Image 1 (cartoon, rainbow, N blue to C red):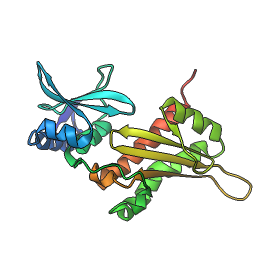
Image 2: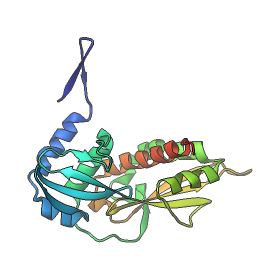
Image 3: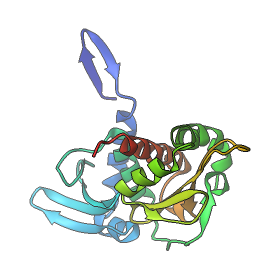
Image 4: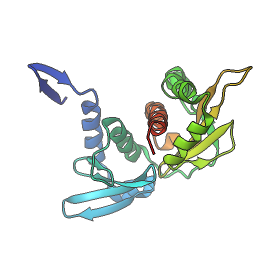
Length: 216
């Protein structure tokens, strides 16, 4: 596992072991097959093979030999986001999108992680936007969200080519507290392990909250 020396104390990177494992597994796959199954595009670069994917509406590039993931500006993704991208490529089996929404707990094995998922994804959204549906809508549009018709406000996000997430807000009123939920295409488990779906929910919530804090 990668370690960092800081003032004489060895600090462990909690993601590095998982990233190293994903990179090793990636090299066992044919990038052309992985691209076909994941909705990406295989590339031949001077530096080696790569796969290009759409991530939040922007093209990213995964270098096959190293598992390095670059955004359009050339900046690396966060370790969490990078791990989701690598696991997406490893898990993708080419199943068509179902065009049918399921809650997290309705996904295979979702009940096991549902409490943690709601704490990580749904509760922060309700807390931040429960009395501000207009701010929720503005943040969603900044992220390229497409309007849906659930609750008081809802938006579709195409996070990866075959991973779609719907974020839904039920605003607080005189009778009921605010609630929020995330739905996933029924095919999602063909593209991500359930643990990654739970993490993805937190990432979507975090992106929405950060977008709401941006200034014009």
